[in-house]
Length: 123
Image (cartoon, rainbow, N blue to C red; front, side):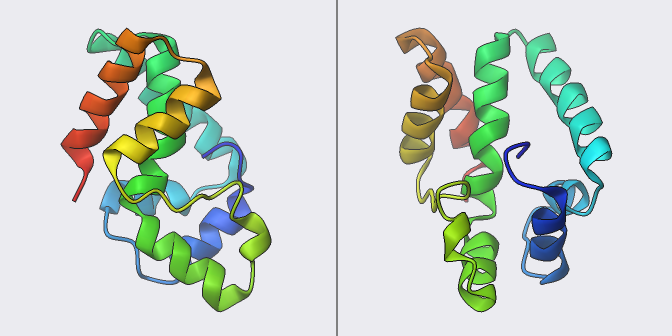
């Protein structure tokens, strides 16, 4: 979520439509706090045996997948469809894995790991 200014994330969080409490907390942070939390989350994922590229890809796309409804609602209600390239509507773990794989140039093994991580959080 580092590709989107904290102000936009704060506005999405303020809609009250987010479903994941941890992501809601993250979306309410300042830019510096988000960067720090991102570093911590990257380290936690890597500690579970995943590589840095996989961890970063996961953190890029997982919030988009999990909070897709809140994000889409915000973009429509605010008229900020110009943000859609930075906040794509990812409907499935497979779609999110494709985007994450492309954005981080993951190899097939890393891509499979990313999909596995995304399937765990999908609802």
